Image 1 (cartoon, rainbow, N blue to C red):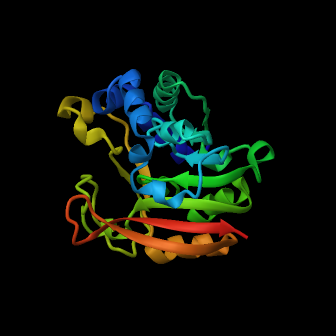
Image 2: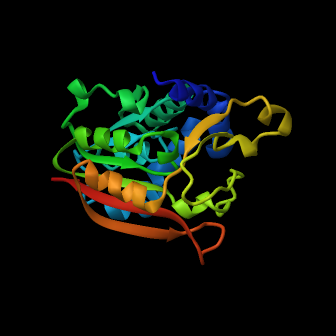
Length: 251
């Protein structure tokens, strides 16, 4: 495993299960919400799926299964790839409570077994701040391309690159030049929800943030056909961009 991935793994296995319980309830409670209205639980991403039934979905850095379980409820065959055992525990317990099955591979995404999973998926899906965990976006996109069948679709949603220059989403991360290529240490995503005494003990993550052109060019250079690029308003201020969703096809 790459050194910075080991660092990120330590961060994402520190109190992660407890955090999901605190934020989303016990797995049985979360499962009830997923079953009640799985499309609502997918939020805006539901609009990017053509269908769900029997569609093979690779959920990249799928965390606690917050999107994977609703997809499974809707009939998709979901495999989550994520670095955290704590995330796996919460996700699989939630799936069991919801009466659905899914696979969950605990691994560094850059080390996914392509002999097993190459050309395997109809959809590769990621959301919620993923790209900044990988220091070489071209390597990352090459792997996404390899996971898909010919004609398969990548749904890549992430924090808008404008969040590099200001804390637009109030994630309490440092600001920097938009064109910075710096790798830096920062708090993990949910550190701000803990008391200071715990927060100070939590391991840091290693980040590299990208510009819009770096992201789009990495998609094109990996062989994808870029079909769509949507910008979404920040949840803190709907006058400014906070997230984007990129749709690309394996030609």
